[in-house]
Length: 165
Image 1 (spheres, one colour):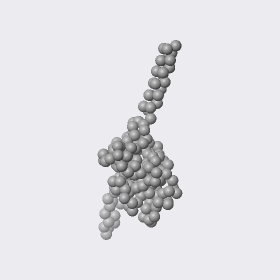
Image 2 (cartoon, rainbow, N blue to C red):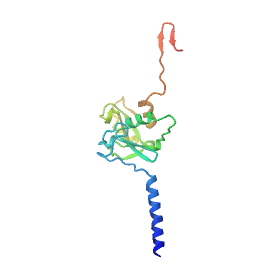
Image 3 (spheres, helix red, strand yellow):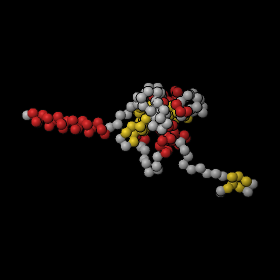
Image 4 (cartoon, rainbow, N blue to C red):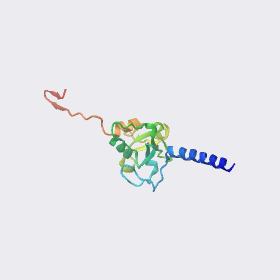
């Protein structure tokens, strides 16, 4: 009977340890966690973000720092938006980038001058936005508007036309 109980406890322990090892903690501890890109201490969680890579949750002090890291990865590395987490500006709660709305603004001080604040709803983003030059977008729009361009084309205008055509 004693060996059966020990075997049962061993199986339960293996299951618990196996389950814990596969799930990263999706949480940012202010004053303890640091930005994976710039190594700055994260003290304003409502500006922070994170990303799951290879089963590990990497923390960033701003979505802009996270975007810099993503852009530095090899092209073969695929980052799914479901692995990206953004902090709600009002509550500091982390949520998947798929469900977040971002306000691109230069009217509010932001960490690392990222010029972006995130919200868990369209209504919250709209009520926050006060200026005509602010842009309300999603994660893909943020990457497009604030990331590195995919292609830079130089053109010259002359009396004979534009070069290259």
